[in-house]
Image (tube, rainbow, N blue to C red; front, side, top):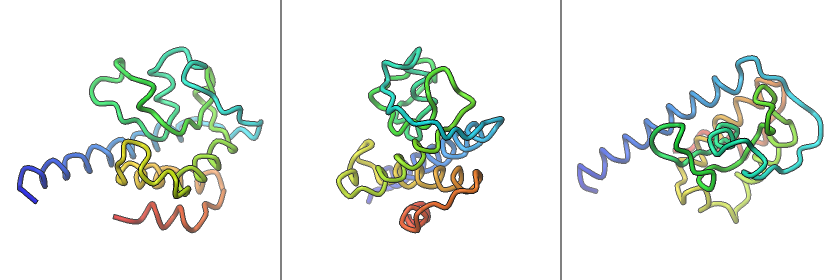
Length: 143
Protein backbone atom coordinates (compact mmCIF):
# COMPACT_ATOMS: atom_id res chain seq x y z
CA UNK A 1 0.00 0.00 0.00
CA UNK A 2 1.44 3.38 -0.96
CA UNK A 3 1.97 6.19 1.53
CA UNK A 4 -0.71 8.27 -0.20
CA UNK A 5 -3.22 5.44 0.05
CA UNK A 6 -2.36 4.89 3.72
CA UNK A 7 -2.76 8.59 4.54
CA UNK A 8 -6.07 8.73 2.64
CA UNK A 9 -7.33 5.71 4.59
CA UNK A 10 -6.30 7.32 7.88
CA UNK A 11 -8.04 10.58 6.94
CA UNK A 12 -11.21 8.66 6.03
CA UNK A 13 -11.05 6.81 9.33
CA UNK A 14 -10.71 10.11 11.23
CA UNK A 15 -13.62 11.64 9.29
CA UNK A 16 -15.81 8.66 10.03
CA UNK A 17 -14.89 8.74 13.72
CA UNK A 18 -15.68 12.48 13.90
CA UNK A 19 -19.04 11.88 12.23
CA UNK A 20 -19.54 9.01 14.66
CA UNK A 21 -19.00 11.31 17.63
CA UNK A 22 -21.13 14.09 16.13
CA UNK A 23 -24.05 11.73 15.48
CA UNK A 24 -23.90 10.32 18.98
CA UNK A 25 -23.78 13.74 20.64
CA UNK A 26 -26.56 15.07 18.40
CA UNK A 27 -28.62 11.95 18.96
CA UNK A 28 -28.44 12.20 22.74
CA UNK A 29 -28.93 15.94 23.36
CA UNK A 30 -32.49 16.34 24.55
CA UNK A 31 -33.69 13.32 22.62
CA UNK A 32 -36.61 11.17 23.62
CA UNK A 33 -37.03 7.49 22.93
CA UNK A 34 -40.31 6.87 21.09
CA UNK A 35 -41.95 3.46 21.21
CA UNK A 36 -44.62 4.29 18.59
CA UNK A 37 -44.50 2.13 15.45
CA UNK A 38 -41.76 3.06 13.00
CA UNK A 39 -43.19 3.64 9.54
CA UNK A 40 -40.07 3.02 7.45
CA UNK A 41 -39.83 6.59 6.24
CA UNK A 42 -38.36 7.44 2.82
CA UNK A 43 -36.22 10.47 1.97
CA UNK A 44 -39.24 12.11 0.31
CA UNK A 45 -41.07 12.08 3.66
CA UNK A 46 -38.60 14.62 5.06
CA UNK A 47 -38.62 18.38 4.41
CA UNK A 48 -35.19 18.27 2.76
CA UNK A 49 -32.31 15.91 1.96
CA UNK A 50 -30.37 17.59 4.76
CA UNK A 51 -33.01 16.70 7.35
CA UNK A 52 -33.21 13.14 6.07
CA UNK A 53 -29.44 12.72 6.26
CA UNK A 54 -29.37 14.15 9.81
CA UNK A 55 -31.81 11.43 10.82
CA UNK A 56 -29.59 8.64 9.45
CA UNK A 57 -26.79 6.63 11.03
CA UNK A 58 -24.78 6.62 7.79
CA UNK A 59 -24.15 9.72 5.68
CA UNK A 60 -21.74 9.23 2.78
CA UNK A 61 -21.97 12.82 1.56
CA UNK A 62 -18.85 14.93 1.43
CA UNK A 63 -18.78 18.66 1.97
CA UNK A 64 -21.18 21.09 3.57
CA UNK A 65 -24.33 19.89 5.34
CA UNK A 66 -26.55 22.05 3.11
CA UNK A 67 -25.56 20.08 0.00
CA UNK A 68 -26.84 16.64 0.93
CA UNK A 69 -27.86 13.88 -1.48
CA UNK A 70 -30.42 11.71 0.32
CA UNK A 71 -29.48 8.69 -1.80
CA UNK A 72 -26.14 8.65 0.05
CA UNK A 73 -27.75 8.41 3.50
CA UNK A 74 -28.84 5.17 5.15
CA UNK A 75 -30.57 3.83 8.26
CA UNK A 76 -32.82 6.67 9.48
CA UNK A 77 -33.66 6.53 13.18
CA UNK A 78 -35.62 9.79 13.52
CA UNK A 79 -39.02 10.52 11.99
CA UNK A 80 -39.71 13.57 9.81
CA UNK A 81 -40.45 16.73 11.80
CA UNK A 82 -39.43 15.01 15.05
CA UNK A 83 -35.73 15.72 15.30
CA UNK A 84 -35.80 15.26 19.07
CA UNK A 85 -37.20 11.73 18.91
CA UNK A 86 -35.37 8.48 18.23
CA UNK A 87 -37.62 5.53 17.43
CA UNK A 88 -36.94 2.28 19.24
CA UNK A 89 -38.21 0.20 16.30
CA UNK A 90 -35.91 2.15 13.96
CA UNK A 91 -32.93 1.39 16.21
CA UNK A 92 -33.66 -2.32 16.10
CA UNK A 93 -34.32 -2.20 12.34
CA UNK A 94 -30.94 -0.51 11.86
CA UNK A 95 -29.33 -3.19 14.02
CA UNK A 96 -30.81 -5.93 11.84
CA UNK A 97 -29.76 -4.15 8.64
CA UNK A 98 -26.18 -3.76 9.84
CA UNK A 99 -26.00 -7.43 10.84
CA UNK A 100 -27.63 -8.77 7.66
CA UNK A 101 -24.93 -10.53 5.58
CA UNK A 102 -26.67 -9.33 2.40
CA UNK A 103 -25.81 -5.76 3.43
CA UNK A 104 -22.13 -6.45 4.08
CA UNK A 105 -21.11 -4.43 1.03
CA UNK A 106 -23.91 -1.87 1.18
CA UNK A 107 -23.57 1.64 2.55
CA UNK A 108 -20.89 2.84 0.19
CA UNK A 109 -19.19 -0.55 0.02
CA UNK A 110 -17.11 0.50 3.00
CA UNK A 111 -16.84 -1.67 6.10
CA UNK A 112 -15.63 1.35 8.07
CA UNK A 113 -19.03 3.04 7.66
CA UNK A 114 -20.78 -0.08 8.96
CA UNK A 115 -18.42 -0.26 11.94
CA UNK A 116 -18.94 3.41 12.72
CA UNK A 117 -22.73 3.12 12.47
CA UNK A 118 -22.64 0.03 14.68
CA UNK A 119 -20.55 1.93 17.24
CA UNK A 120 -23.04 4.82 17.35
CA UNK A 121 -25.99 2.42 17.46
CA UNK A 122 -24.51 0.41 20.36
CA UNK A 123 -23.98 3.65 22.30
CA UNK A 124 -27.50 4.92 21.63
CA UNK A 125 -29.12 1.61 22.55
CA UNK A 126 -27.12 1.41 25.78
CA UNK A 127 -27.87 5.05 26.64
CA UNK A 128 -31.57 4.22 26.40
CA UNK A 129 -31.19 1.10 28.56
CA UNK A 130 -31.52 -1.31 25.64
CA UNK A 131 -29.26 -4.30 25.06
CA UNK A 132 -27.67 -4.49 21.61
CA UNK A 133 -27.10 -7.90 20.07
CA UNK A 134 -23.63 -9.31 20.83
CA UNK A 135 -22.94 -9.43 17.08
CA UNK A 136 -23.54 -5.66 16.83
CA UNK A 137 -21.16 -5.02 19.72
CA UNK A 138 -18.59 -7.25 18.01
CA UNK A 139 -19.01 -5.35 14.73
CA UNK A 140 -18.64 -2.01 16.52
CA UNK A 141 -15.34 -3.14 18.04
CA UNK A 142 -13.83 -4.56 14.84
CA UNK A 143 -11.14 -2.80 12.90
